[in-house]
Length: 363
Image (cartoon, rainbow, N blue to C red; front, side):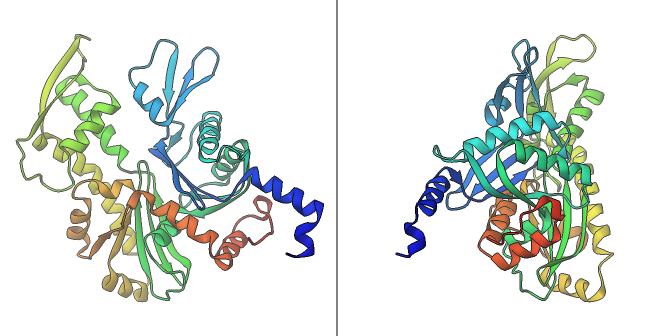
């Protein structure tokens, strides 16, 4: 044992570190917040929702518990989705939500976190970055570094940082879609569009209201998306589901039967917009990069990549091989977590961030 390890100061530092959670990887999205803690894996995977008392502002519930209330809130309680299109739409509610999620991610002995890597959408503004940092500070996270979600997703999907050839990773989230081209551990080209799988839900709600005269909630729309919607023509267009809601004319409770054939074009229109954006980005690639992509194909990550048939539709549209990563919802936090084990690359990302946001330690 070294002399240093025996000194009272070092012993006190060791005790202090026992009260500090180690590194966190955080993916705060419009649909869900996922937190990975080094050495423990994914410890938080919950909807990005918070329920508040309207009078006092007190937090009633977050995540899954708030989702159970969504659309059926008690009198005086409102459920909010403070993240919209991958960015902070309501700072106060976001910081309250993240503080609770981060608190639940820590061990019972930890009071704050030493450092965290957070994923962000390509092209977010400095104001949007500061909102993420402010939320992290409120959640008692010591130092925070921002990493573009496409780069993190690439690492989590198995792309090597030292690979000189280009790989394209498409992350389809709840409210965003990013296309990121990686080569030699750096981003060659990236775009981020504020459209994602949750837009299918919104399109279904709008269609049912306008064309069937029934007002339905978000949870009913999500059920329809999962049961009937797809990016490609369904095998059984007559498959149906009965949904209930409020008649827009009379205001009374009502129910209708709706088929996969009716829902398909509604969902497909949103998917077409997503894929149009992806296809447009692919036309902007340099020739050498385009050659690599032709040989390697496209990697899909994010929860939206699990939407039925989206990989087949993208393959048909681009004429490229499309590969869905293992556990695509966790690709981003897996990639962020890998950086903690690669000091060289972590240092590289620290240098890419604004100096005011960072510490200068490497580990």
